[in-house]
Amino acid sequence: KDKPRQRASVSPKSKLPPKAHNTHYYASPWVWVLSCVVLAVAMYYTYTLYSRPSRYIIPVQSPPYTATSPPASSPTPSPVELPTLTRPLLWMAPFLSGGGYCSEAYSFVSELANHMPVSIDQHGDSVDGQYMRGLPRTTALTLQTLLDATRTPEFFTKTQETITVCHSEPGAWYPPKYQTSACPPQPPLGSAYTIGRTMFETDRIPSGWVERCNHERMNEIWVPTTFHKKTFIESGVDPDKIYVIPESVEVDFFDPNNITTQLSLSVLPNYSDDNYNFLSVFKWEKRKGWDVLLKAYFSEFTAADNVVLYLLTNAYHPSADFSFDGEIASLIKELPEAQQQSLADPSHRPHLHVIRAHVPQAQLPSLYAHMDAFVLPTRGEGWGRPIAEAMSMGLPVIATNWSGPTEFMTDANSLPLPIAGLEGR
Image (cartoon, rainbow, N blue to C red):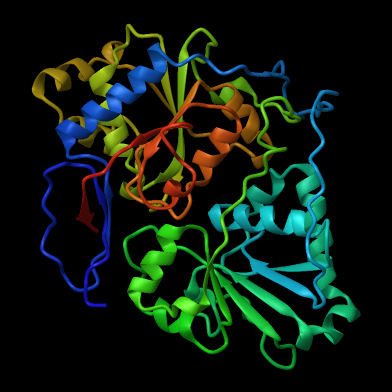
């Protein structure tokens, strides 16, 4: 319990920093020289050798966007046989907030609702109005129906029999460390059986999580991967409580042959289907490895190459400045002097664009469909939702082979970046 948390480092000879109490360690995708070389080779490999995926791109229309019917050849999924649930199910998660927990929770309840009675409630984060306005119509209607189910007289008469899923980081579980709805619900409502669904991207879990996971009000703890099962148990969580329930991806929604809402190309400067277009999707924070990605990209490509890297990102901290005059400029100063001089001239820089416009959830499949490969040299992921979405869209994927993505990335379906050590946070 006294060991610092760790994330992977991708240098074959890297040494761990001194282990301070409660320090997290993540994957560090490569000590700079080696990391940039390996990632650059992987990106160049996809650019030169990977056959471009077949893509179904709908002609761009200006807002308001219109939907098209899916092709008649789209296969119908086989029905899933699920056991009968004898108790009501209440799923509490940040359904109206956007982000990983939100997307994951919706994927679970939207399918479960086809087989059994499900009700949901907002929990664990604040409501994001911009995210809600960008939801596909079917998603919005499903969420409204499931939210309304918690406002019926029948729901309140059965709460003592309810199975509750608290789908959030444990700091939000009752008693929450910040303002949010009580999960599990407290008297006079209550819960007959409570499941905590959570994850963390380092080699151990934060202070206080063990006690919350082991509390008697939590009957089970669901984690998405065997990586998390190991790190939770090694941190002190009761192994009898832990179950691995993998995350899902909406393969009908993230389907290159079933795009129903079109992306305006105005959000993709200098887009051309003749270019090789890389995409990376992440929050602007060091954990996501944006620094490794850009160093590799600047080392491998120049303005003469018909290659473009698009970054769909948002600030993790309000002070973040992901521009060529901000944090990217600081990163360039760490490069060799000759490379700095070349990048100082905008006409010599490889094509890089930060997507500053909000891309609604309904348009994400269209964004992926316009790309040729996805890349994310992350230092640690709970699951790696954009990685799974890109794979569902048929894109070649380059990502770090550590933490959550190890559950579904292999040499046969992606280009995993190996790691060789850990670095502290």
